[in-house]
Length: 193
Ligand code: VGL
Ligand code: ZN
Image (cartoon, rainbow, N blue to C red; front, side, top):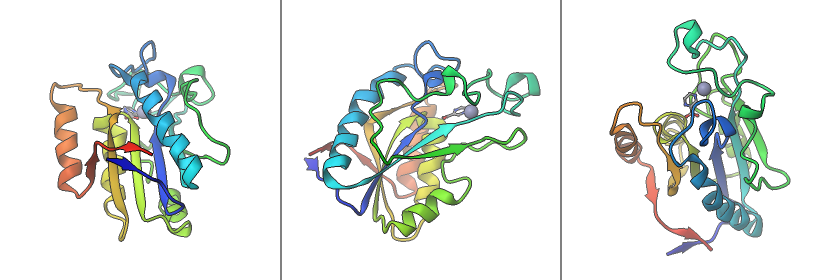
């Protein structure tokens, strides 16, 4: 099956940043493999007049999620560093809206919906279907998808081929898929037209 995107569709690219790709500070196995898949969806969005949103993890150097502050993670996605940049092969279209998150030192935010701005932008644009891919399945993709499923009238599709998990514990990625399905998201195997 192939999907044709329309102006009432939006694509949400979650944290496709260097630090989550091989060689990065918090590398996700196969993280860069989401890029060519997402580029196809981006092209389809361009052709169909769908909106494109790209979230980014955007931490200050003293973010509370970093190990030196007792957090879970090595320093990653520090604002204005190469690790925080989008993957260089990601073909972000003109007019893509960048959503920065977790940019306050004392607040963690895995969800692209954390600030409330994204939900408002989707509402204002009359978006009825949201297509989500990116990194990482078990953190920011999951948190964003779970929040999206709470928006009345929004159909949420997770692009199966365009997500990869951190898997801090084996099975975390699988559990995240189950949680997203349980919340009403559709795990999508279709390709874009
Ligand atoms: C993420 C761990 C820490 C993510 C962000 O984007 O999934 N994971 N910060
Ligand atoms: Zn982070």
